[in-house]
Image 1 (cartoon, rainbow, N blue to C red):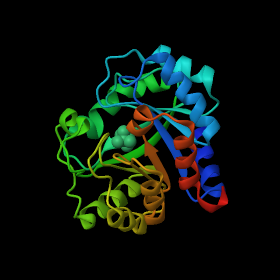
Image 2: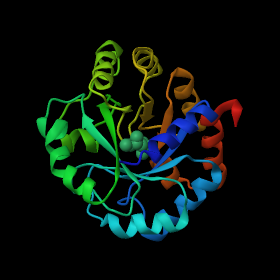
Image 3: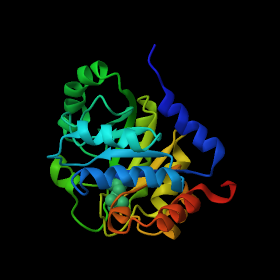
Length: 251
Ligand code: 1GP
């Protein structure tokens, strides 16, 4: 029997708060000691999980996942760019299929290569429909995947993609503007997608202030992801402000 404790944890977070807060740690952006310290601090500030990964990695994930586990009790969830981005020292993996694109390698190819290793490493796989949304600047995921994002003014195209993810049995949908995007996913696109699905909606890319994060929650995001902003300004006050803004009045 496979464990679903991380997905269960996400559902518990949604019962407790308006929305949950994921912090992305990209091993290319911070050295090991600082990444580990960040993980401990964001747990104290109220984050609900750590995403670990990026579109293009040259770092070894084993030591960093081990170091993160020593600093935090939050689930460490792999956020892979491809099938090489795996480690047994994480708890789970967003088993993402890039459903906004039409590149078979990122729809199913990398997933097949990763599957035996996910089994061997006993990682909880969380099937996730991953949708790249135009964010006003060219992003690493766009380049690496060789796919074009959904235009930001076309929520009516995004909605059926998300619905297809749910019908395919995926457990979450991730609307991604890309790390460091000039503009985050528009509120209208979030609300249109949210109205069409019953599975949790993750929104990330280019979110730089707690106020913006709160707007994404108001539009319908169930989980908000921040990455770059804490690597640029890792103050505890900012982490706490994000967690409070995303959790809402029930915090
Ligand atoms: C990227 O959604 C995440 O995959 C986070 O993006 O680094 O822009 O916060 P940022």
